[in-house]
Length: 208
Image: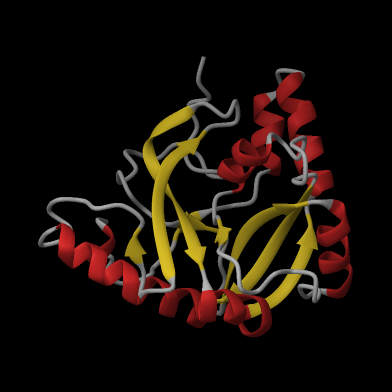
């Protein structure tokens, strides 16, 4: 069984490109999602910034798709992913990251050859993966959703420069999950964040 609606929070409206960034966004910001243990997630939401315990030297993965985050964290039920955060970041930050990003795997047609991909990978602190988007039942859809990996300077900039606000959306996740379990998909869909195509500029170097 599949939920046949369109991208999160939107009605079905024709075919969706195989690879496309869809996100909740404003004129100046984009919302991405992460999930953490409460010991880290709750202080981040309370203070609106990542605490010193957040390891800025590690690779961190951000996801503009709410439902892909729900798939990854099991509706906030997986260990150390019990707190789901909606992190509003600057468009300037994510746009710059995308411009210098590299696919996390070699892809013929996108890269001239494997060595060119390896060179780009070594030079970039930003990784991109295109993962199957999910429906309300967390089944895979035929189109892909962005996952953006940030390391080194990109990870530090995300935490300390790009972040505008951090909200705990775990209660929202629980409410939507309860409606899905009750079989009320229209009510569940009505609560989803509205995610629309994000105008990120040319993404040919990322296979999109």
